[in-house]
Image 1: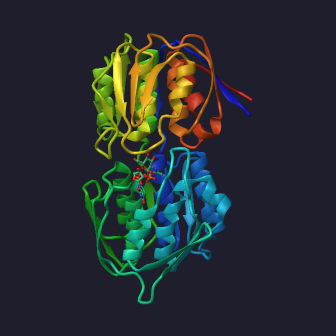
Image 2 (image 1 turned 90 degrees about the horizontal axis):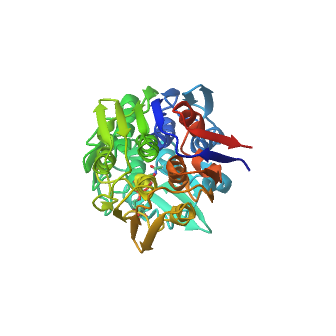
Image 3 (image 1 turned 45 degrees about the horizontal axis):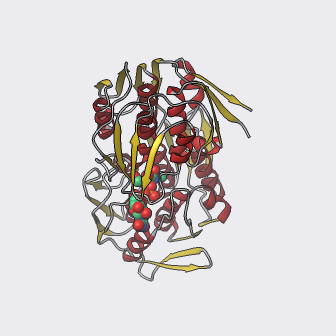
Length: 419
Ligand code: UD1
């Protein structure tokens, strides 16, 4: 199994272009099923989660062609509605196909996605909302069978008790084919939901409100395939910025919207970095050790993103001063802490809270990725650490980062993938 070997302590300088957003492109690829014909998605990153999604589309009968970062999905030949367990297990977020398949074929069969490395990941809100739209759903021996009840799906007002990103997206997709008006109250407000709305509009769906907590969809209109460019990945951007903050230097990150990352940028500024932003780029300068900052509490957008918690923690662990983190979204999102401790980090965890006391400089060690963002956090820590770090289990990192090592090398980092 290959691993990254990083010689830390080299300041980073230069510019990096961010790839398309993983969390946008996955629901957008599923949404391609809604309109028969060929949709074309640009800025589609080469990630293992994207490959898994394309495999599912092919298995369902779509023709899928990739040329560079452009992917064409022809959904005219869609003929299957069942997703086998091995593909579901590869990627939990394939639950998004539920809404898309229901909308297009009126039925869907997939295995229950179950838990993941972040702890239990229930889908009760997805199922309750789809049932309310008129889907009959049975759960048997780990399989989920969904079928439109007699009379088909019907638009209506729905209330989500938690602003779940996945549940909001699933309802948006299913509602496209529900005659009448669907209103989602308590919707997630993440920028990736806005990106999905923009793609659905291109398909011809009258939809509005994404980015606020009320989304309305006029279902049942005639849809047509479309061409769409996916937004830049704000969490990948946060990773490069935190890497530069930890290692020192001056790095420009382009191809994403800094106003979707305000919560993270203000923490980095509070820690002592100087940040200049424009519409589609940010430049971060880091000259001294990072300072401890006010408590960082993860929250739904526009709060501090749970996906950036481990990454910021890794940068601050090699700084000075104390910072309290409170993880409010997932139960089991501190698995990177034990690995950071191997590098000399001083972090105490108690339930949802983690107190980070800056240890000055971390040191290199052999560590392993525990999950996608936990793995990225180890890279951030290693860039600022003294000596050599070996990061194993790159499969997690490949789920969400395209050519991370190459991009960091271009900024002056000493990072190699050792086969
Ligand atoms: C998405 C993102 C993930 C991010 C997360 C929170 C994708 C592919 N993944 O995941 O990177 O970390 O949003 O911003 O976009 N919940 C329930 N019942 C449900 C659904 C969710 O209780 O039916 C709970 C979850 O356990 C969690 C919270 O709601 O505590 C938020 O989860 P959700 O927003 O649904 O996350 P995902 O869509 O899975």
